[in-house]
Length: 386
Image (cartoon, rainbow, N blue to C red; front, side, top):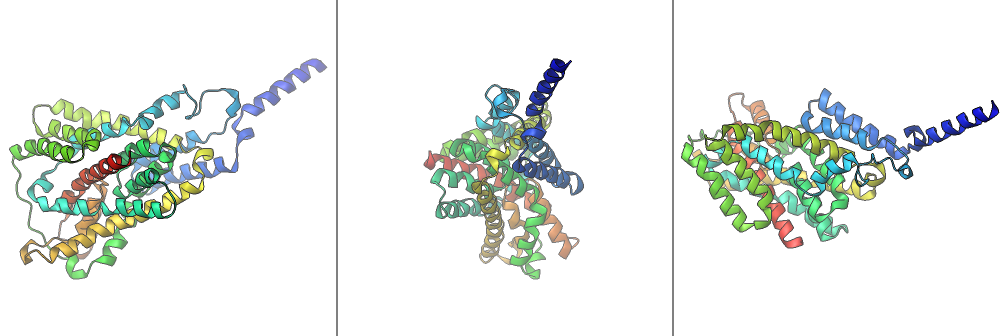
């Protein structure tokens, strides 16, 4: 009887060493709270639920404590584990181009085609990327890490993951979570900056209705866009190529099934896998570092700079435009590539001051230009840093 009790006691003691309760640290508990907070924001506040729920749940998955020496093959950083295999889509950089394929297949570039000067707003907003890059260099990050951190200012999660997987894989979890966090917080971050930098008179500017864009123009745009951007920045080809390919599938009119697949089931599947694995990569031992805190601070700065740059550029640009052609600076915030949320914010803030002034279609021009601009900026950084 005594031997049985000893045997049972030893087995229970061994079992305890495998449980999460025995292996939990303060770091794990902190990250579990962060994951629950992301899920709360997604459900209660409806902040980017399709991103924050997978990421938030992924944080929970990645921070279930377990005995690292037991060889359980369940952790995302354990070679051969299921999570590790799924995470290779992030580390190898093939999730982001597939996301861009879906974005291209669901995006209407008509607003940009009808008013090409709106492309300049999308370009101006990329100052956030290079501003954060210079600040990161100044505080001690090496050039490759600084480039990966700076891309957060583009408010483009797939681009941030793609670039950081090439330049700073060890910082990818913090960069990805930071980028998606600020994308989700667009409704909170951007409006105060927009109000601060504009006058009431500027907020009331009415823009001419965009002209009707022909089917031929819509078909030509992705072809010309691909050739122009990728001849200029060949290193951006994986993202830009897939973006314009997806758009051609949509606009050609003869590949509707392919476009529907790319913009529906495919992008949904990749979003689930990307969000879950990025969240799971935030294991407390890897994520809770001084560098992670600095990345979140720099990410916020880059986002502020990007939003302010877009708004201020429109104000300056208006000095050179005739009275009837002026641009409402409230669409300057849409130069960041958080599609379509930042364009919706332009609309919402504009309606606060004039309930009949609809800015959404105008804001979509710089918004989609921001998608192209952030991919070009990533290509530039990749080209001269690698």
